[in-house]
Amino acid sequence: MTAHTETVATGLRIETFTVEEETDTTAGGQLSSWFEGVSFGFHENRRENEDLPKLAEAFAADRRTVWGVYDEQPGPHAWDPRVPVATYATMVNTLNVGGGRLLDAHLVTAVTVRPTHRRRGLLRRMITSDLQGAADRGLAIAALTASEATIYGRFGFGAATFTTSVEVDVRERFAVTAPAYGRVEVVEPDAVVGLAQEIFAGFHGRSLGSIGRQFAYARRASGLWGDERPQPDKGVRTAVHYDDDGRPDGYVTYKFAGWESTPYTMRVKDLVATSDAAYLELWRFLGSLDLVERVSFNLASVQDPLPWALSDRRCRGLLGEEDVLWLRILDPVAALRARHYEADGSLILTIADGLGYAAGSFELTVTDGVGSVRTVDEGTPADIALDVAALGSIYLGGVDARTLASAGQIRVGSPEGLDRADHLFSVARQPYCITHF
Ligand SMILES: CC(=O)SCCNC(=O)CCNC(=O)[C@H](O)C(C)(C)COP(=O)(O)OP(=O)(O)OC[C@H]1O[C@@H](n2cnc3c(N)ncnc32)[C@H](O)[C@@H]1OP(=O)(O)O
Image (cartoon, rainbow, N blue to C red; front, side, top):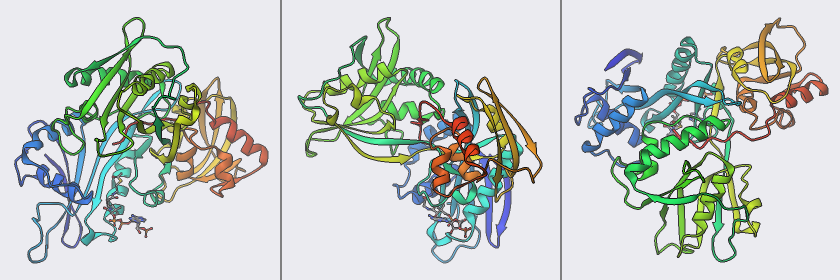
């Protein structure tokens, strides 16, 4: 259902619409054509018409708003003008901001601009208009996962959470030393969806930096849906760990890389645990898979306990680190108030924001882990001065203020002020987001 249409440049029309259960999913319809645009932008296969109803159901459940830019003056033989030359989508889900607090965040996804229309300001047009709308609706934070690290800083987003890619040698020398508990069951895909949602909810509530998952996630994790299409991926298997009282406290879904791929490798698709102990039990299970020599996992925490729980820590090889969540603070007062703090103190910070939303000087005072924020006069000497993108990076504690000061991203009023900034924003457990959207 189209909510809004606007001409953005000569011959270019922007349309935003929401997806509902009754949305037309036939080939050539608005939604089907929009998916064609997204698939083109990410170099994926064309969509199968039969998949559309399931994708529409997922988008309706997520309450997504979808944007398309249409070329009204296509050249001769140009592709179907119903297929947008630029796409964009948003939804709201929760971000764990520490201490078990969940804050609604504005999530941006499916951003593409056709090569024939790139670098003419279409992304800028969509994202600035969208961020304004999110700010108007009172959302304090926007978030995305970025295809390239060079795109979103200019719009005020900073990299905020990180994961590591690991490869674990699970041959004879692999052994988890932590005491064993509970039991593992292999579970059928149909049962996985509910279990995955339940276990993820437990993880989400206790994990700083976690983003709530969209409708399709549990289906993809279980193999009911494949990565490319909402059709079963019959190679995906799931094991669920139950604690000593029979409560599910973790699951892992995995897929064999094939007999041609040596060493024989099992790829973890999704691994969610509600406690460190359950996490290690799932690794004990993965290490017990016969005929498998290596297990790969690309969403491990940067503070992964696994090597410390192995009798031979060198079984676990570190391949690299990736940024996951990028945050854009839209309302610094609301965002800084919402966050849980592990230390008390006060700080004056001056924020620069090219788009204006977060610009100003603020005093943050934390008492018993709860922040209160007030605006202060512009001339007030600041302890730290930073761009809103740098604030997004330190907001969850994924990088400390000192590191950003060393990198020239934070200007320091006094060494003591930097100490306080470090103290206030630091976290014992690094933020950990295992949701891509
Ligand atoms: C949240 C997500 O969905 S992440 C996925 C992002 N999408 C992709 O990676 C798919 C492939 N790429 C694309 O579709 C496009 O190149 C996009 C969406 C990245 C950029 O769209 P465009 O319409 O070309 O961007 P636009 O013209 O508005 O550029 C805005 C600014 O960003 C800069 N920019 C755009 N893309 C990039 C890039 N890939 N790397 C560095 N800078 C970029 C432009 O130079 C411009 O800078 P300026 O305003 O400071 O001069």
